Amino acid sequence: MSSQSALPDFYYFCFGAYEPFLTTIGFLGALADPLTTHNSQAPWKGGPPHTELPAATFVTIIQLAHTCALLGFINLFILSAVRNHLHDSPALQEKILFALFTPLLMGDIVHLVLTFWALGDDRWNVASWTPMLWTTFLLGITLLVPRLCWHLGIGRYVDSRDGAFKRIGHASLEKRQFSASPASS
Image (cartoon, rainbow, N blue to C red; front, top):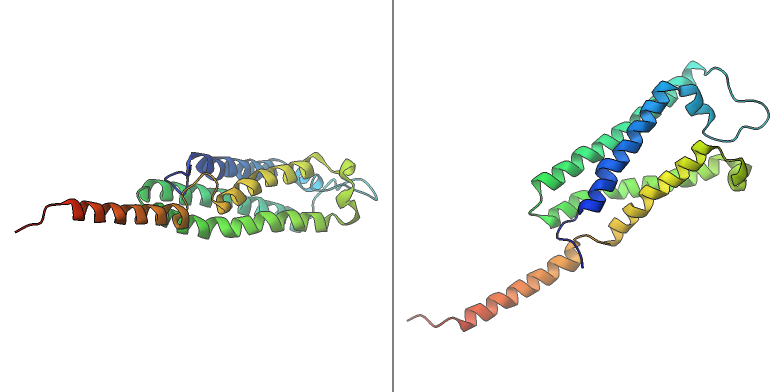
């Protein structure tokens, strides 16, 4: 049975609480220790990791972390607005959420593909992966799978499926009520 909302509790928690939490923790971690954040992104070969970051690398790490946190907060605010102000309009919820979740789903997929690509020959040498790399993949999948499920309409209102049925059912109910009412003189 589907929900009467395009944003039921599970999806709201996943993308309105869990994802902003992850992106905020990532941002704070990068602020607290940018060197470790940088050095733990992938396995190191040919020498030890950096002991000092060039200014350009430091700025890039902080900007990237900030962008991730911002994305999490955009999710939180949009999802809260959809839930609070459009609770009586699941079809409109679905349209707005589709516009938000579609680029995020593409981003989830591209993020994993680009990370694999960037690892080069080490991509399949999972024994050499750093804990941060494992975390990146596993947490990325914990967001990709529910986002894909949302797009597949699992456990949520889908207007083309649920709305059409309700409109047909409502129209036939009105016809029955109209034909059953006594004729007025």
